[in-house]
Length: 367
View 1 (spheres, helix red, strand yellow):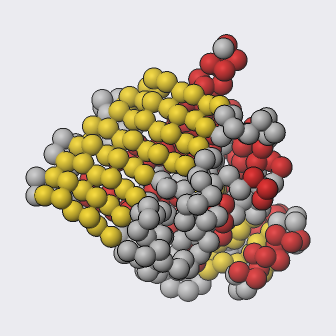
View 2 (cartoon, helix red, strand yellow):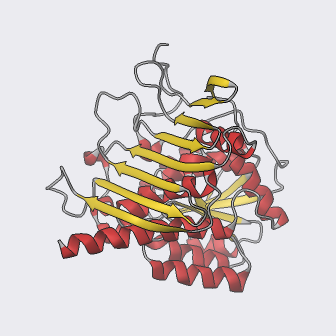
View 3 (tube, rainbow, N blue to C red):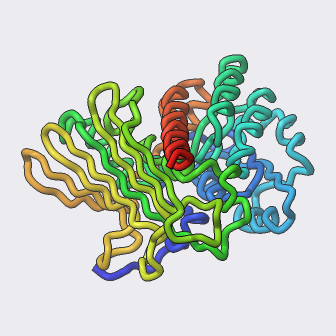
């Protein structure tokens, strides 16, 4: 199959914003959200997902005039807020989406929740375990939601469909999840904070949080023990704060095992920003997800390959799922439910990725 012309920039992971046949779950002007801090390009995907599901975008704020102008050009219906406080004080805004520098996300979320609104941040949601503890406390006292854009499952059709197949019993009980998550570095296009470990928290805290979230979902895991974790800068000596390689192994409290590799080594000749793969072993079958491309055959692509007692299947998921997460999140905000993702699940994915980072950092100090 030939490489397809993309609708979005599939070579640029920082600004990748997938589009699908999304069903609106709410009528216009029945759910309002605003956007603040545009430091990471994922804010476009977060916003687009909510708009496609029926959300009404009201305000945007960012101190950088250029970023603000670019966002308003993409979403001309939005109004520019004079300050972050204007969004916090707005009575219509029910949820605030944010893609601030990672180390600032928890502080932003705390202000949003104390203003009586729910918060939807890009991953990673925290850079330290102390931030996690503070946010947990504010969630408990405020009753507000701290949602996270774990996009590698919630905004990917193959990854989403794999979860639906597992829930239907198609491969039995999940025994192991392996995720491979190469990303394109695009070093010359990255902001300074991208190379500051204190700002992004380390590669396992950052990209690794996506991977842990998938493990928790697919294997129905509530907690896990970290067996091994490693991070390194293998090929970018000019950027000492960058970790370009990481890996982690875990064993869940239900016995399922997990391995993830995360890296910044997508080759220049690849059609997409990353050849993300997930391998899921069950007691009655197995699944492979080719989440972004099918090498040398199709890009973009979103495919599931499943083998079970009924035979072998190749399932084309591109354009099929409609990204239900965003509609579920909107309805969770309105109805105060936890259909899209439970708060406990959100926090556990972040906690385990940060604990893995801490173990890897300690090993580097001791070596």
